[in-house]
Image 1 (cartoon, rainbow, N blue to C red):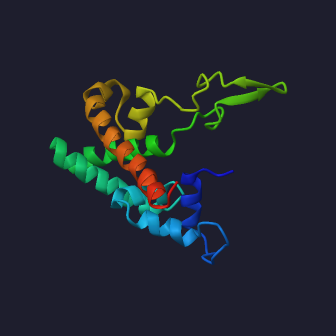
Image 2: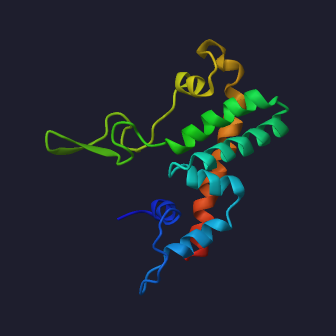
Length: 168
């Protein structure tokens, strides 16, 4: 069964807006999403491969970074791009977020993530995503953490707010 974030993302691209007995219609999910912040809405749509929404989310996040940390636009875009990639691609690469794997027919805790289902991004991965040389990442790491924290908060509140509007 799909979780609320997946249903919400699927509802944004469906052409079936008809009523269904005793079910929340796709149009209601879309209406709940419409009340999200602009970056929250764009992050949700970007996860469903909407390139224009991804670009808008990067620019909104970069503007926030530029204003709150007094950075120029280019480094702000680097950090915003990397943070959004990390928010969008949070699942463990091995188990795809399931927390376990079948090895020789036996269900086992995923050895890559230790059963949490989350990929822990390394500084090397973050530097590569931001386009910053790995040996220079230490100069950007603290700023990146601030941008990532803000991006995660916007992403989390979007699903939570929409869920509350629909009574989930």
